[in-house]
Amino acid sequence: MREASQPEPGQGEALREEIRAELEDTRRAYHALLDSLAEEDWNKPSGNPAWTVGHLMVHMTFAPRMLPADVSLIRGGGWMPKLPAFLFNWSNVWMTRWAARKESLGTVGTLYDAAHQRALDLPDTIQEDEWGLSREYPDWDPILSGTVTIERLLYYLAEHFEVHAGQVRQGLAGEAPALEKE
Image 1 (cartoon, rainbow, N blue to C red):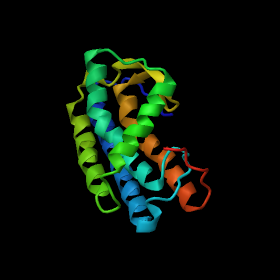
Image 2: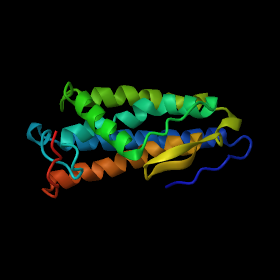
Image 3: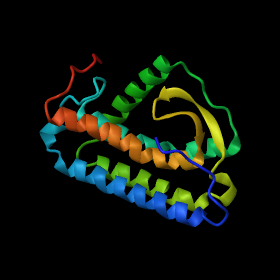
Image 4: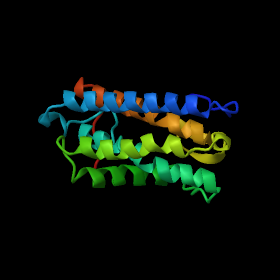
């Protein structure tokens, strides 16, 4: 996990450029993974027992889609839900399955790109004194829990992608556990 720190005054633009570059690298990696899939791969089990390869490709759009709301939450100091982890995980599984039912190998890239563009625009809205603003996140996701700053949140997208891309690759390699019952 990348540690976030308050940038020195005037360093925000360098941080914005670094974040934009990482977001673009992640977008390219997402599309490379998507382009490597064949239609028959979409419904294969993945390395995550809750989801197929297709479910994961849709789930990977969630982090960039939620990023603007998460930044607003941190900025506003608003209420952070503290659902028990089992309930969060259950809802995450079912929201992903629900969202994936309308997506396909041919549509999910457009969904990702729309979310990516909103994420890419977000660093321009961060003021110099906002990078270190933080909230306590529940222990739902081991790579996004505890004290989370706006800076940390923006770097999370690449880590979220890498975790789930690895699970897609496991499924493609035939190293997938049995899917959980729906």
